[in-house]
Image (cartoon, rainbow, N blue to C red; front, side):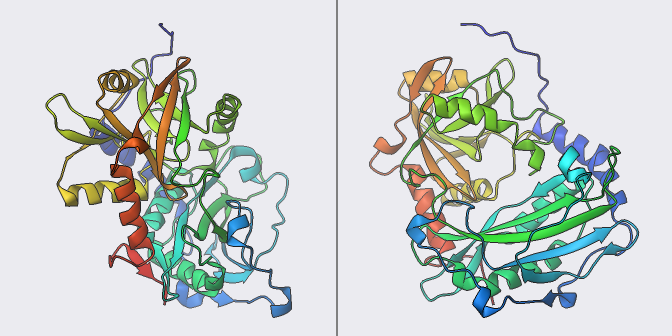
Length: 401
């Protein structure tokens, strides 16, 4: 079956690294006027009255992102004065003018990371410096003010320390941390906002998918819909990347599927899976086992869990590890020949999640991810989980003092 699609140009990873930072990101340095960064040493803390503290939820009843802790972090910025005083305060509503730029032009970026609780009660973050660096890159691309990542991380750690009791004790649970930056100037002109707000919310969470982390998910791969394209913002955590996916997500759910496998171009290049990066375990024609994930070519979010899986795989040195383009034709051929062994997603919210089925052009591709005695995805999941919960000592796990 042939489908007529628009021609989409694909840049190599080298081309994107060379072109985008030099031409686009350097222009964003103009936002760093006034006070260059806020500082942890200036942090002010206002704690909530004990009588007003919210009750802790039952860890078995938590829905992702639906319950918030008692406190939040916030700091404002103006182009003339720079950053204000950073504060940790009780969670409160914002008062925004209806003409605020974020409400019209989606000048908003965010991050997502987790705090875990060790068996001895210590709270720890997983590779948080990478989230701070990625947030800074997103702010550059969105013409939002820049900051010192280490100063934000110090403030974030303090917030997590205050909310430590909100981290559920149950296995698989954690405290989700959501830093967000938005443009709040009340001006309908299509220019960068002269006012911004950077804030952090935290909420206790269980497994991201209702089916649980050990149960596989099914995907819709519809080539008529594209998430990102070369020269766009697919590699940044922009709020505007997510709303357009909701419609396609609904189409998938109406077909009894759970997520969307995003494709790009006439050859059906695979990019991401909904809120996840994607991996494949293939048996090559020469018998070698290969772990494959699409390359960071500017269309794909550079996930922290993605990088951690690649780091672990290269440390193990037990199979070929490839960051290379992969398309649906290769997946279909490998599956027919019995060489498609596993497919799984990775992300902060989901950790590692197996995939059992992909629906492409009205045909189902069944993937035997969970049918192996010792699947590779489960080894990654266990190793990462053991690091996150302190059962394996690692520099990736950063305790909160």
